[in-house]
Length: 127
Image (cartoon, rainbow, N blue to C red):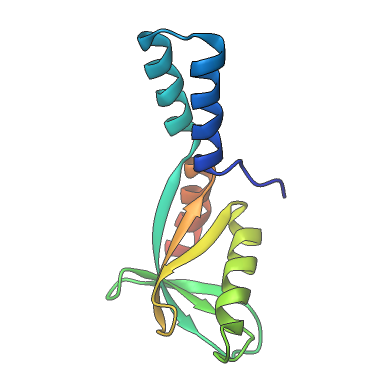
């Protein structure tokens, strides 16, 4: 899976182009909007059950408004979090990073990728 170029890198490329190519104000705004549209981000609420038999997205918890995810790893030294990021990235086809709840079963994860494809995959677990 090829990961997208991080936003900070794209922004540096844009600034480089501004100074080296002599772009005018309208071209700068157009380039910035294009960069922002190319970096689709989505935040997911997750409820994790560590130390399960296998990794799986087991459904959607309407009460918590979160995807229910089971991980094989024990929640020791961040192993379950590492597995969660790696496997969710694989399943969703997008980069996934935990942004809150590192030591909790309830987490928030940032998903960076094609937003419509990710939402479509998540919706299949919500049904």
